[in-house]
Amino acid sequence: MKYIIEGGKQLKGEVTLSGAKNSALKLMAASILTKQEVILENVPKIGDVFTMIEVLKSLGVRADFDNGTLVLKADNLTSYEAPFDLVSKMRASIIVLGPLLARLAKSRVALPGGCKIGLRKIDIHIRGLEELGAKIEVSHGFISAQVKRLTGKKIELDFPSVGATENLLMAAVLAKGTTIIENAAREPEIADLANFLSNCGADITGIGTDTIKIEGVKQLKGCRYRVIQDRIEAGTYLAAAACTKGDILIKSADASLLTMVIHYLKEAGLDITANAKGIRARSNGCLRAIDLVTLPYPGFPTDLQGPLVASLAVAKGSSIVTENVFENRFILASELNKMGASVSTQNHHAVIKGVPNLIGTKVKAPDLRGGAALIIAGLLAKGETVVEDAFHVERGYEDISSKLQSLGADIRVER
Ligand code: UD1
Image (cartoon, rainbow, N blue to C red; front, side, top):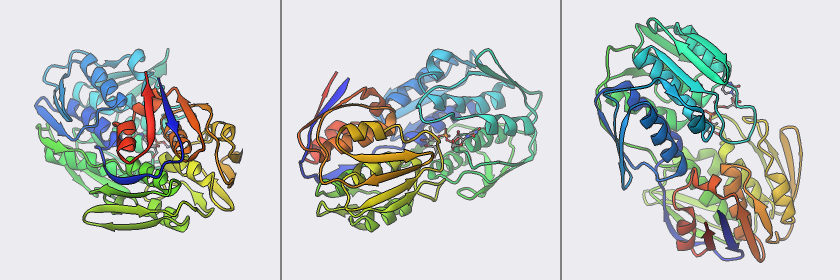
């Protein structure tokens, strides 16, 4: 499938955010931890959610997804193995490792696939679960884990990995005794997971900080819970507005989740105001170059690096972008350069020399966020841009083409 974009249209109007992909997927995995029904609201209709539903169904979880509400019941788990054909579609499937281990004392997950943005290792997940008493073997393309009884411990992560923090948190809620995760990742989606688990009866303190303390409980109950808004989606629309003479309101968007994103975009010249209505962004279409560094939260999110690089392609001056989270996240550069951008990369740095215009052509989405960045490039370019392999984008963005159309973009999907 492809997106076909006629560039040069001003983005104007209001847009509503969907639920956060990176939270919804984890809350879904966490449903494994209880026999009772879990009802999740504000779940985005995106490819990765449908893949996670398949992963859960393959384990015996009953799932019913209707109009953003997902009802899950894991009263009768029939398997402890997440198969390769599903895991290879989505790396986030690794997140069932911890909950399966906590519930069944056994789990087997195929080695993950997903975005081609680097090695995406799993050593921190493995070491942490071993600290909680699991025996883990990685062979024949699978991670196999088993345990007599998960037992709480103090674990210090080498790096604040989002997935490892979540896997350990979910394993620890049913472990015996106290677990303390130090140097934990602080992404808002982790706090959302911890709040969900607390609603199910888990005993967690330090939510939202880098030290999370979990007192294990015997069992969890079900609950009804609303997924937080997608801050990465919000940042993507801000980046799109920044380079299209935009004047948009992102309704009910929470600026406190986007502090660094707003900081950098303001520095680049975007006029941003935030109030109870949401975040309003206005641009005169003329961006200034900036130097930008990605970091774990509360730093600037790596997931928005690509969308920002696309906008900065037409900024006045040269921007330097340093990517500190994933090692291969500049694969987008060659596609942008096909459109006339001047992006050169060395190791984890990119230099973007602003050019007056991008010119539409045929490009290929390298991954989810890279695809979103190419859509932004298409919106600002002169002429027609065709973004191929657009299925990547639909893994993570709900209704992106219709949301952009409602803002005045000329974009259509060809399936
Ligand atoms: C999650 C997000 C992704 C986001 C990323 C960083 C989901 C589904 N995905 O991915 O959108 O870009 O956080 O904010 O929530 N690492 C190791 N060993 C490990 C684990 C990670 O070396 O055991 C490295 C990775 O290779 C990577 C870095 O740590 O370079 C960050 O990875 P991590 O925070 O785990 O990201 P994900 O959970 O995969």
